Each structure stands twice: as structure tokens, then as C-alpha cells.
Image (tube, rainbow, N blue to C red; front, side):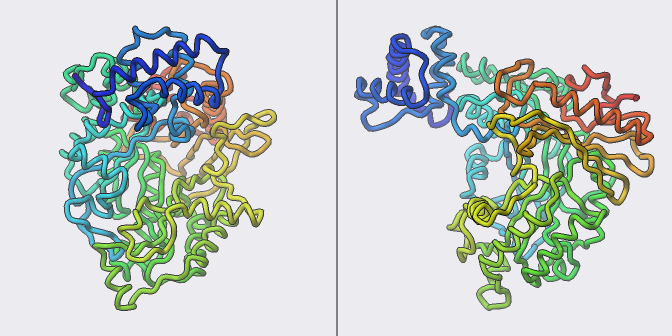
Length: 551
């Protein structure tokens, strides 16, 4: 009989009785709010001795409701589940993110700041939360994915739209055979009906398929559809052959380590690539329609606060850069690095926390355009791994407070996401265009009166035709379509939510009109495998891993 990890099997009967007491309480009272629900739960707990020393987790109760559904009324299950959602913010961006780790070194290079803990993927530590989960499952992609889906589901989240984030160093460094196997097993896990799996309690319910193509095909209609795959790699590993291969895997988003675009700094930190390679990689990624993420590292050896700010400004003034997504990873002095040795012998001296905060605030408030999303401001590195405490793990919150106190705002997408707020006024569509090295980008976005982002689309019009893939020749490329708000199951429409209220359809139609005006006769969408059926409804067909439509 299968039970989720950390579920207290010895308390199963007691949990059933607890829920039965709660059901009786529900029947006696009017619809409850969170406060009265908590009071009812505490009263029910007092009636059972098993819970005097331990408070049951919300996901334990969800598991009992699924496994023993017949013991409770459907109305009670519907009512109580709204109180059992844990960490709602995890799915407020419209999707559920699953972070997975590959096994192995993951990179042949030795950048001075990069930790190399024995037995761990390059640049990651064994006590990071996501890495700890991977270790528990021996870095098995199927087990990692399945367990995360189970826990998201038991925490009350809809898991029908899943973004896969693969970490573990330079993904392109691993052999193709391993990468294909890894991604196939991720698809296999997402093709499992999690609710049925939890109800049956049988591990042998899990189904696998023989090929990556078969597993991808099954995922088009699965209960947990993969809407995108995000990988991280180095700029010097990006070429036509690699990008064609990544597309066969279903990759839609590539993050590259840019650190700071300076050949002098690259030489000092032993990066072993050039700024020109960053430019070329960015141009190629955009030509293939992939979403582009940059990792930036302020406070590296050889830099100053003013130089960092100057280089970060160039990221958005130089048409050869201009990424869609950013992660700021301020340089951290950690164990297992050359940089720690430099710090000890005073070869490297970082600038102060106040200086770091000042340049990040200037960057966010004065430089970052509204078509960029800043996903992170720090790494998930524990203070145990830091040799000196340069900044607190909650650096983002510190910066946000300082910006608020000084009436400064960041226009990035993450800072403007609607999340669970109500739309203010009538949503309106606006378009921003900007030049890039190999064409023109259009950012179409719905916002409300408070400039909250409700959804957007990235449309790329290339200057020249694409020769390697027939599907992209002469095509405008939709590189990203995203609607924000709490995840809503596919095919359902709920009150007070943003998703499934036609923002995506309206953005798609506007992009088609704009493409026609720009002289394109067709559109190619870099669609995640799980979104293919959605685009088929609007006349798009699968060609060379893209969804294509003549316009």
C-alpha cells in the first residue's frame, strides 16, 4: 500500500475520526471563514488524545479525503478543501513549478565562485531544499517529479499546468542519451493520474512508455500537462545543433550564465567564454523562439558598484542582449570555491551590503523595462555554506521595503503580477516594441488601472528567414504566452480568477493581426507539449516541434 513520504500511517484512523468530527461541525454551522474554521479544528482536536502533542498538516487531511472519499459527503469535501490550500503563492503565476535535479558534476569548468561540493551537481549544495528532495530520490527524475506532483496536489493546488525546471549545472554538458532519458521519465511521471494513484494506493498503477515521443504524445491530453521546460546552460554551448536537440526534448526556456558582460571579468573569474559568445547565444535562442533568461552576478572580482550598474544598463541598451527573464545572484563566498581562498588572502574584497542594495535598487527602479521578469534576487544558499554573511536570505524583502520607503517602484513583470488581487477598472491592452540584433520584438500586455499584469505575449519578427527549420522560414515567432492569477484546472472557469477569461485568446488574435501588419505570412509558436491541444483549437498544427499557422 502506497503512502506519501512523511505521512504518519499510525494516525490514519485518528485522522479519519478527526475529519468526521469536522464534518459534524460543518453541518451545524453556516459557511465558515478561515478564522471560524481554525476554531472548529481546534475544538475537534481537543476531543482526540492522539493530537495533543502534534498538529495535523493540511496535506494529511487532504490525503485522507482522497483515500477515503466515500466516508464523507461531497459537499463537506468541497467546503473544507478551500481551507486546506498550503502556500497559495506557489501557483499564483498561473502554473505549478517543479524544480528537478540531474545527477553528476554537470560542468567541466572551474569558475572561481562556483562551489563544487563532492557528490553534488556543480554549483549546488546538499542542504538546499530542492537538492535535498533530489537526494532523497537518488536524483531519479521520475521519483522527483511524481513526489512533487503528489505534494502539490495534497497541498490543494491544481496540477494540470506544470512547468519543469531542470537544474544541476550545465544541462548541455550531459550526454544526449542521459538527457533524453531524464526528460522522458519526467513526462512519464506527469502522465500519471495523481488522484487515481492516491486513491488506489498501489505503486504498480504507475504507467511508463517506451519512447520520448510516445510519452510527449500522451502528455498532450494528460492530467498534468507540461506547458514548458526550463534548463540552464553556458553561452558557449549554444549552437544550431544543440538548439534543435533541445527542441526535440520539449525545452522552451533557456537560462544562460552571463554573470557580467565583460571580457576582463570573464578572464579573472576563469569563465572561459567571451561577451561575443553571449551575444551570439542570445541571438540564436531568439531565432529559435526560445525564452531567454540571464543569470547576473553583481560583486564579482574585478568590478565595482558603478561598473556593475553600467554593465547591467548595457544589458538593456545593447540590442545584442535584452533577455526576457533575469535572476540576480549577488556573488557569495562559499565553501568549496577558489573565491574563498582569494577572500582569505585578501586577493578579493567584496563591496559592502549597502552598496549592493543601492545598485540593485537603482537597477530595478531606473533600468529594468516592463517586459522583463526578475525571478530571483538571491540563490537558495544556506548561511551554513556562506563563509561570510554578506546578505540575509530575505534580501528581496529588504530591498522591497527600502524601495517602498523611498517611493521607488520596479516595473518588472514579477512586481506587477496580479496574483490573487482583484482587477481594478477595465483591463486594457498596450504594446511595447524594441529592436534586437536580429529583428524586432513586440510585448503585448493586458493590465488594469493599477498596472497589474494580467497576461502578456512575446512576439518576435525576425529580419531574415530561418534556414534550418522549414516551419520557421518567414514566420513570426510567439516566444511566450502567459496569463497570470491562481491556477484554474483546464476546461473550468471560476469567479474572481484571471485564467480562462479569454485574455490568452485575445492576446493571440492581436499577435496574429500585428504579424500580418509586419509582413509575416505565418506564425510559429514555441508551445510546450502540454499546450499543443490548446493551440490546435485556433488553427495551429504541429510542424518541427512548433505549432504553426498560415495567416
